[in-house]
Length: 254
Length: 338
Image 1 (tube, chains in turn green, yellow):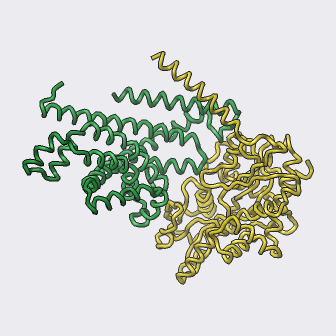
Image 2 (image 1 turned 45 degrees about the vertical axis):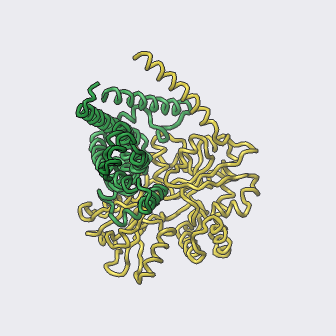
Image 3 (image 1 turned 135 degrees about the vertical axis):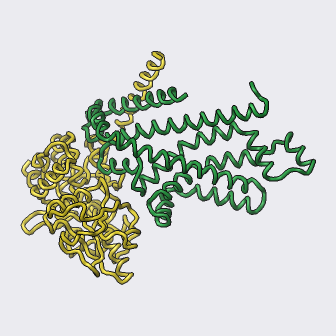
């Protein structure tokens, strides 16, 4: 699974790079606008190790931010699934929060939390929690009638049980949406680093752009793609294991 | 596998054709129907008063030119737009020009706008004022990593033999809170623009602001200049000449104290968020930074400062080889002779 995803990414990256070079040489653009292949290679040899650690730094923050987002989305969805006033208000607040562009909210976050790890985590979580929330609310508000009916009629239904039943019955959907939102967690972390942090690959990207150094940008984009592919594959594999285990425990051994 | 690669190649070819056809959608090389595109370095503010003045008072039209002035921003690079053909003229700082030329970009400098770089460091002047480079020791200095303020500060410290371990650097961004909170002693600003806004805020809090100007301590780093491409100069010298003439006329008039009210009114039409009182202060500060020494025309290119800028960049390994700036500085005088 991993090698296939990495291969696909490499193919896309090389295609894009080829396109860029085609553009450069067709229009006879200087290395300032688009660097030549040799410059990209030379830059890669110079900055690769440093960017590798920056990328790992970003990936680790993205993973924690993603976890935070999952917890946040789960909590909001559990409360928001109810048709009560509180549920409705929580949903409204969550939707409105997403309507604000993160670049406008970020300065406030940096004032409150500084430009360290906490701000990066929060921004990563805020960017990726919304698609999670929409799916979680969708899943948790949809009754699984044939199972829930028994507990309702026997008076044994509790909210915890209701959440468990609905989550269990939609494990595949949950795994897909969690894996899908991982990309947004990476994006969120990079945006946070780009706007105001002083570490990570987003911060290195900002410096490269200040220096108009597109070769560095291309190296950074390559590493972002690799790390993103790695994280997605890990999540998909983890989701596959969970589903497999659940099927075995329920006797569904196909 | 081969099938996949063939598909990928086909995709590349099709995308390339689409991209190339899109690239051709930029403004045509000079034509009577299409306006000339002039890309600024930053958003509309007092630092572009002369550009807006030329447009609003019809100086371009009087030269028979239609000009579309487009604001810049952090993600805009006039040099790249010139090369791709999306702009005919632009504004760029000397470090941008030198980096570009070092990588083979065919850029030509037509006029130098700021004679003294507006990039300075604001600090609290009340207690422990910073008057000489030695006063920088043991201070927290804000710099934009990758920005030209980083280059200037490294050059200044090296020139005055101050070790980088004798100061503390702080990575800055657009939010000035660390400076207001006193966590950072010096913060890089454009003295004539945000420098005055921060000064006002400090004054409201009962504090005096001062500016640390590297130019006073031997670092003459050139800021914004008007640029175009070699192709424009070679193929349309008359258009270049008329454009530059109209633009510099606008700059001279806008910075003339006798027409200050007109200049402020012009900028206010584009920058509605800044008060008239502040715009007037910004105009005064801009005039001080832009007016050349007596006997020199507005737009005079300080070739010594350009050489120093290129030298600093080479010393700091920001360019791979020395750049001969004389070849890229066209200047008003040379343009007249052409």
